[in-house]
Length: 315
Image (tube, one colour):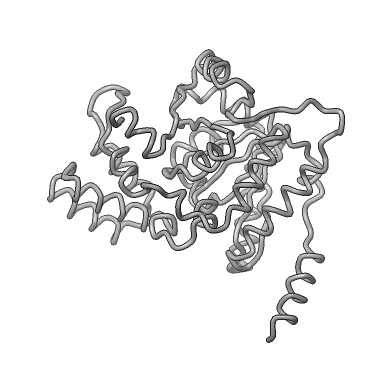
Protein backbone atom coordinates (compact mmCIF):
# COMPACT_ATOMS: atom_id res chain seq x y z
CA UNK A 1 0.00 0.00 0.00
CA UNK A 2 1.53 3.32 -1.04
CA UNK A 3 1.55 6.51 1.03
CA UNK A 4 -1.41 8.01 -0.85
CA UNK A 5 -3.59 4.98 -0.05
CA UNK A 6 -2.50 5.05 3.59
CA UNK A 7 -3.36 8.73 3.87
CA UNK A 8 -6.75 8.12 2.24
CA UNK A 9 -7.53 5.25 4.63
CA UNK A 10 -6.58 7.37 7.66
CA UNK A 11 -8.77 10.21 6.38
CA UNK A 12 -11.71 7.85 5.82
CA UNK A 13 -11.25 6.38 9.28
CA UNK A 14 -11.13 9.83 10.85
CA UNK A 15 -14.19 11.08 8.97
CA UNK A 16 -16.20 7.98 9.94
CA UNK A 17 -15.23 8.16 13.61
CA UNK A 18 -18.24 8.28 15.89
CA UNK A 19 -18.38 9.67 19.42
CA UNK A 20 -21.09 9.16 22.02
CA UNK A 21 -23.27 12.25 21.92
CA UNK A 22 -23.72 12.07 25.69
CA UNK A 23 -19.94 12.48 26.05
CA UNK A 24 -19.07 15.11 23.44
CA UNK A 25 -21.98 17.29 24.57
CA UNK A 26 -20.56 17.55 28.07
CA UNK A 27 -19.22 20.94 29.07
CA UNK A 28 -15.51 20.64 29.98
CA UNK A 29 -16.28 21.77 33.53
CA UNK A 30 -18.64 18.79 33.91
CA UNK A 31 -15.74 16.35 33.45
CA UNK A 32 -13.07 14.93 35.72
CA UNK A 33 -10.31 13.18 33.77
CA UNK A 34 -8.64 10.19 35.43
CA UNK A 35 -5.25 9.84 33.74
CA UNK A 36 -3.63 6.40 33.62
CA UNK A 37 -0.26 5.04 32.54
CA UNK A 38 -1.59 4.44 29.03
CA UNK A 39 -1.33 8.19 28.47
CA UNK A 40 2.36 8.19 29.40
CA UNK A 41 2.98 5.12 27.23
CA UNK A 42 1.47 6.93 24.24
CA UNK A 43 3.43 10.12 24.91
CA UNK A 44 6.80 8.46 25.52
CA UNK A 45 6.74 5.20 23.52
CA UNK A 46 9.57 2.78 24.00
CA UNK A 47 10.06 3.32 27.74
CA UNK A 48 9.80 -0.22 29.23
CA UNK A 49 8.54 0.96 32.65
CA UNK A 50 5.53 2.59 30.96
CA UNK A 51 4.56 -0.37 28.79
CA UNK A 52 2.90 -2.48 31.49
CA UNK A 53 2.47 -2.93 35.23
CA UNK A 54 4.88 -5.87 35.10
CA UNK A 55 7.59 -3.80 33.40
CA UNK A 56 7.08 -0.93 35.85
CA UNK A 57 7.36 -3.19 38.91
CA UNK A 58 10.42 -4.93 37.47
CA UNK A 59 12.09 -1.56 36.90
CA UNK A 60 11.35 -0.47 40.49
CA UNK A 61 12.76 -3.74 41.86
CA UNK A 62 15.89 -3.25 39.77
CA UNK A 63 16.28 0.29 41.11
CA UNK A 64 15.77 -0.94 44.68
CA UNK A 65 18.52 -3.50 44.20
CA UNK A 66 20.93 -0.95 42.72
CA UNK A 67 20.21 1.59 45.47
CA UNK A 68 20.46 -1.15 48.12
CA UNK A 69 17.17 -0.18 49.77
CA UNK A 70 15.74 -3.69 49.63
CA UNK A 71 17.23 -6.86 51.15
CA UNK A 72 18.58 -9.28 48.47
CA UNK A 73 16.19 -11.92 49.76
CA UNK A 74 13.25 -9.54 49.28
CA UNK A 75 14.50 -8.64 45.80
CA UNK A 76 14.48 -12.31 44.83
CA UNK A 77 11.04 -12.83 46.38
CA UNK A 78 9.47 -9.87 44.56
CA UNK A 79 10.99 -10.99 41.26
CA UNK A 80 9.41 -14.37 41.82
CA UNK A 81 6.06 -12.74 42.58
CA UNK A 82 6.19 -10.62 39.42
CA UNK A 83 6.74 -13.80 37.40
CA UNK A 84 4.21 -16.02 39.19
CA UNK A 85 1.46 -13.80 40.64
CA UNK A 86 -1.42 -12.75 38.45
CA UNK A 87 -2.54 -9.77 40.55
CA UNK A 88 0.33 -7.36 39.94
CA UNK A 89 -1.47 -4.52 41.72
CA UNK A 90 -1.23 -6.46 44.97
CA UNK A 91 2.48 -7.04 44.31
CA UNK A 92 2.92 -3.30 43.72
CA UNK A 93 1.21 -2.42 47.01
CA UNK A 94 3.33 -5.00 48.86
CA UNK A 95 6.48 -3.52 47.32
CA UNK A 96 5.46 -0.01 48.40
CA UNK A 97 4.82 -1.19 51.96
CA UNK A 98 8.15 -3.00 52.11
CA UNK A 99 10.07 0.20 51.35
CA UNK A 100 7.92 2.45 53.54
CA UNK A 101 7.81 3.12 57.31
CA UNK A 102 6.08 0.48 59.38
CA UNK A 103 4.21 2.96 61.57
CA UNK A 104 1.58 5.59 60.84
CA UNK A 105 1.21 7.64 57.67
CA UNK A 106 4.78 8.93 57.68
CA UNK A 107 6.25 10.59 54.63
CA UNK A 108 9.76 9.12 54.14
CA UNK A 109 9.78 6.19 51.71
CA UNK A 110 12.51 4.54 49.64
CA UNK A 111 9.82 3.77 47.07
CA UNK A 112 9.83 7.41 45.94
CA UNK A 113 13.61 7.26 45.49
CA UNK A 114 13.21 4.20 43.29
CA UNK A 115 10.55 5.94 41.18
CA UNK A 116 12.85 8.91 40.71
CA UNK A 117 15.56 6.53 39.53
CA UNK A 118 13.23 4.79 37.08
CA UNK A 119 11.59 7.94 35.68
CA UNK A 120 14.53 10.34 35.81
CA UNK A 121 14.27 12.98 33.04
CA UNK A 122 11.29 11.18 31.55
CA UNK A 123 10.07 14.35 29.85
CA UNK A 124 13.16 14.20 27.63
CA UNK A 125 11.60 11.11 26.00
CA UNK A 126 8.36 12.79 24.93
CA UNK A 127 7.73 11.91 21.28
CA UNK A 128 3.98 12.40 20.88
CA UNK A 129 2.74 15.27 23.07
CA UNK A 130 -0.68 15.51 21.39
CA UNK A 131 -2.44 13.60 24.21
CA UNK A 132 -0.95 15.86 26.89
CA UNK A 133 -1.85 18.93 24.85
CA UNK A 134 -5.42 17.67 24.55
CA UNK A 135 -5.64 17.12 28.32
CA UNK A 136 -4.30 20.62 29.00
CA UNK A 137 -6.81 22.12 26.57
CA UNK A 138 -9.64 20.49 28.52
CA UNK A 139 -8.14 21.63 31.83
CA UNK A 140 -7.82 25.14 30.48
CA UNK A 141 -11.58 25.13 29.89
CA UNK A 142 -12.49 23.87 33.34
CA UNK A 143 -12.08 20.09 33.31
CA UNK A 144 -10.61 18.61 36.49
CA UNK A 145 -7.77 16.09 36.39
CA UNK A 146 -6.81 13.28 38.75
CA UNK A 147 -3.72 11.17 38.12
CA UNK A 148 -2.23 8.52 40.36
CA UNK A 149 0.51 7.61 37.87
CA UNK A 150 3.94 6.82 39.27
CA UNK A 151 5.57 8.88 36.53
CA UNK A 152 5.38 12.69 36.35
CA UNK A 153 5.06 13.22 32.60
CA UNK A 154 1.81 15.18 32.78
CA UNK A 155 3.08 17.42 35.58
CA UNK A 156 6.42 18.00 33.84
CA UNK A 157 4.72 18.85 30.54
CA UNK A 158 2.30 21.18 32.31
CA UNK A 159 5.19 22.95 34.02
CA UNK A 160 6.82 23.56 30.65
CA UNK A 161 3.52 25.08 29.48
CA UNK A 162 3.40 27.29 32.60
CA UNK A 163 0.57 25.17 34.01
CA UNK A 164 1.92 23.62 37.23
CA UNK A 165 -0.19 20.82 38.67
CA UNK A 166 -0.63 18.91 41.90
CA UNK A 167 -1.23 15.18 42.20
CA UNK A 168 -3.22 13.37 44.86
CA UNK A 169 -2.82 10.17 46.81
CA UNK A 170 -5.92 8.00 47.15
CA UNK A 171 -5.92 7.83 50.94
CA UNK A 172 -8.85 7.20 53.28
CA UNK A 173 -8.98 10.89 54.18
CA UNK A 174 -9.84 11.73 50.56
CA UNK A 175 -12.80 9.39 50.46
CA UNK A 176 -15.65 11.80 51.13
CA UNK A 177 -14.43 14.53 48.78
CA UNK A 178 -13.59 12.17 45.91
CA UNK A 179 -16.85 10.25 46.25
CA UNK A 180 -18.74 13.53 46.16
CA UNK A 181 -16.94 14.38 42.92
CA UNK A 182 -17.82 10.92 41.60
CA UNK A 183 -21.48 11.69 42.23
CA UNK A 184 -21.42 15.21 40.78
CA UNK A 185 -18.95 14.99 37.89
CA UNK A 186 -18.64 12.72 34.88
CA UNK A 187 -15.35 10.84 35.22
CA UNK A 188 -13.51 10.17 31.96
CA UNK A 189 -10.93 7.39 32.37
CA UNK A 190 -8.11 7.84 29.87
CA UNK A 191 -5.31 5.28 29.59
CA UNK A 192 -6.53 3.43 32.70
CA UNK A 193 -6.07 -0.21 31.78
CA UNK A 194 -5.47 -1.44 35.32
CA UNK A 195 -6.76 1.43 37.46
CA UNK A 196 -10.21 -0.03 37.99
CA UNK A 197 -8.69 -3.23 39.36
CA UNK A 198 -6.85 -1.32 42.07
CA UNK A 199 -8.28 -2.28 45.47
CA UNK A 200 -8.11 1.28 46.84
CA UNK A 201 -9.88 2.64 43.78
CA UNK A 202 -12.56 -0.03 43.92
CA UNK A 203 -13.18 0.65 47.60
CA UNK A 204 -13.50 4.38 46.95
CA UNK A 205 -15.75 4.28 43.92
CA UNK A 206 -16.99 1.01 42.49
CA UNK A 207 -18.27 -0.56 45.70
CA UNK A 208 -18.93 2.35 48.05
CA UNK A 209 -20.89 4.89 46.02
CA UNK A 210 -24.66 4.21 46.07
CA UNK A 211 -26.98 4.44 43.05
CA UNK A 212 -24.12 3.81 40.60
CA UNK A 213 -26.48 3.16 37.68
CA UNK A 214 -27.71 6.74 38.02
CA UNK A 215 -24.19 8.03 37.29
CA UNK A 216 -22.66 8.66 33.88
CA UNK A 217 -18.92 8.05 33.61
CA UNK A 218 -16.81 7.01 30.62
CA UNK A 219 -13.75 4.86 29.95
CA UNK A 220 -11.65 4.71 26.78
CA UNK A 221 -10.33 1.21 26.09
CA UNK A 222 -8.58 -0.82 23.41
CA UNK A 223 -10.91 -3.32 21.74
CA UNK A 224 -8.63 -6.31 21.19
CA UNK A 225 -11.32 -8.97 21.43
CA UNK A 226 -15.00 -8.33 20.67
CA UNK A 227 -16.43 -10.83 23.14
CA UNK A 228 -14.25 -9.53 25.98
CA UNK A 229 -14.97 -5.92 25.03
CA UNK A 230 -18.76 -6.25 25.04
CA UNK A 231 -18.74 -8.28 28.27
CA UNK A 232 -16.57 -5.62 29.91
CA UNK A 233 -18.92 -2.95 28.55
CA UNK A 234 -21.96 -4.66 30.08
CA UNK A 235 -20.21 -5.24 33.43
CA UNK A 236 -19.02 -1.64 33.79
CA UNK A 237 -22.42 -0.22 32.86
CA UNK A 238 -23.66 -1.66 36.16
CA UNK A 239 -21.20 0.73 37.84
CA UNK A 240 -22.44 3.70 35.81
CA UNK A 241 -19.40 3.60 33.49
CA UNK A 242 -19.81 3.62 29.70
CA UNK A 243 -16.91 1.73 28.11
CA UNK A 244 -15.96 3.21 24.73
CA UNK A 245 -13.46 1.79 22.24
CA UNK A 246 -10.84 4.11 20.73
CA UNK A 247 -9.96 1.39 18.20
CA UNK A 248 -8.38 -2.03 17.85
CA UNK A 249 -4.82 -0.69 17.83
CA UNK A 250 -3.00 1.40 20.46
CA UNK A 251 -1.71 3.63 17.67
CA UNK A 252 -5.27 5.01 17.33
CA UNK A 253 -5.26 6.26 20.92
CA UNK A 254 -3.52 9.69 20.50
CA UNK A 255 -5.63 10.73 17.52
CA UNK A 256 -8.85 9.62 19.20
CA UNK A 257 -8.10 11.58 22.37
CA UNK A 258 -7.18 14.66 20.32
CA UNK A 259 -10.40 14.53 18.29
CA UNK A 260 -12.51 13.80 21.37
CA UNK A 261 -11.01 16.75 23.26
CA UNK A 262 -11.65 19.00 20.26
CA UNK A 263 -15.31 17.97 20.16
CA UNK A 264 -15.79 18.54 23.90
CA UNK A 265 -14.01 21.90 23.86
CA UNK A 266 -16.48 23.07 21.22
CA UNK A 267 -19.28 22.69 23.77
CA UNK A 268 -17.99 25.45 26.02
CA UNK A 269 -20.34 28.36 25.96
CA UNK A 270 -18.68 31.47 24.45
CA UNK A 271 -19.57 33.63 27.44
CA UNK A 272 -18.53 31.07 30.07
CA UNK A 273 -15.94 32.18 32.58
CA UNK A 274 -12.47 30.92 31.77
CA UNK A 275 -11.28 28.45 34.40
CA UNK A 276 -7.63 27.66 35.03
CA UNK A 277 -7.86 24.06 36.20
CA UNK A 278 -4.29 23.41 37.24
CA UNK A 279 -5.33 21.42 40.31
CA UNK A 280 -7.96 18.82 41.05
CA UNK A 281 -10.47 21.41 42.22
CA UNK A 282 -9.78 23.84 39.37
CA UNK A 283 -8.56 26.87 41.32
CA UNK A 284 -6.44 29.49 39.59
CA UNK A 285 -4.16 30.09 42.58
CA UNK A 286 -2.08 27.13 43.71
CA UNK A 287 -1.86 28.32 47.32
CA UNK A 288 -5.64 28.78 47.41
CA UNK A 289 -6.11 25.40 45.79
CA UNK A 290 -3.86 23.68 48.31
CA UNK A 291 -5.66 25.35 51.19
CA UNK A 292 -9.02 24.34 49.75
CA UNK A 293 -7.92 20.72 49.40
CA UNK A 294 -6.59 20.62 52.94
CA UNK A 295 -9.82 22.14 54.26
CA UNK A 296 -11.64 19.23 52.62
CA UNK A 297 -9.31 16.69 54.19
CA UNK A 298 -7.18 15.97 51.11
CA UNK A 299 -3.43 15.74 51.42
CA UNK A 300 -1.67 17.49 48.57
CA UNK A 301 1.43 15.72 47.28
CA UNK A 302 3.30 17.50 44.52
CA UNK A 303 5.17 15.27 42.12
CA UNK A 304 8.56 16.81 41.50
CA UNK A 305 11.08 16.54 38.70
CA UNK A 306 14.73 15.69 39.25
CA UNK A 307 15.69 19.39 39.11
CA UNK A 308 13.20 20.13 41.88
CA UNK A 309 14.64 17.43 44.11
CA UNK A 310 18.20 18.55 43.41
CA UNK A 311 17.29 22.07 44.55
CA UNK A 312 15.58 20.72 47.65
CA UNK A 313 18.35 18.29 48.50
CA UNK A 314 16.15 15.22 47.89
CA UNK A 315 12.78 14.16 49.24
